[in-house]
Length: 199
Length: 199
Image (cartoon, rainbow over all chains, first blue to last red; front, side):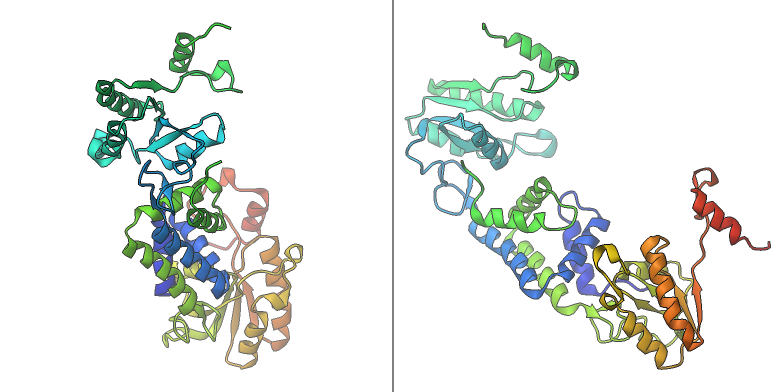
């Protein structure tokens, strides 16, 4: 039975290992690479090695950066006494999109998840405690996702921080702006009612 | 507004250019690359360059190969007097899976498509004519897809070949094995009736 040439098979396998890519999509991607000219294919391969070689964690907040310190931490207009804790670099970028927040961040790179054997030592909790221990922090905002693992992680970290006498807050729950009350789930509606504020 | 480091942005853009990949999937893929160790990332980048460097068209049938002549063409047990014309290397592999065919192939790398400005000169038609012209061919089986462009391409090529006095056949239309008559479309049912054979 005939198959593709082995180097093409290996490329298909490499693409198939990417998250969310099945064997048919991997095939299409590999054929796309074959359709590129050599310079374009090389720039793709180089992009992989460049990202891998240059991107690492900010030595302060653990955000991804290609410098020593990320743009947020090195911006002196930001209030470094308020730390917003997120689980993922993508969440940091989402927070920045709101343009409302002027503090700094701490990226955990994951959440505590006993099911997946991820404990506090597997995410950047001790780096957060070190920052808090250095003084100068007035508030820690827990902005992990409002799901079971995000909740548990926020709870765990807030218990670690409280002995330092620092204010720990959690981002608000409620109905999303622009959404429809009719389709909101019970838990969200309950939280929205509970968190109601005077107008 | 903070974004990802520029080398990470470039990798996300590279993935987003792949067929069927949106910006969110591209982000997930780029993060996957960051999660690999350096050797794994290098083997991904190398797979791209190896496929690009080693895979080319078989000098006889235009199938993809990393040798000079593809495994089918270099297999002397195959009947080289029967040529099955397919539009795509993936179709060749599908035909091979049936294990029924013992002839050789010709891969067009596309179909004639005036809408997309693809004419006969943009696909491997002249290479097919050169093979037929060399003598020794007794039958050409047109196995392009049974859609408008595949039909038109089969029709066009069969008209070019007929003056050579060679038998030109088209793969059969009909209801797929294991499918349900109830859900077959009218055109397929009509073709299935038209092509009925004595039992």
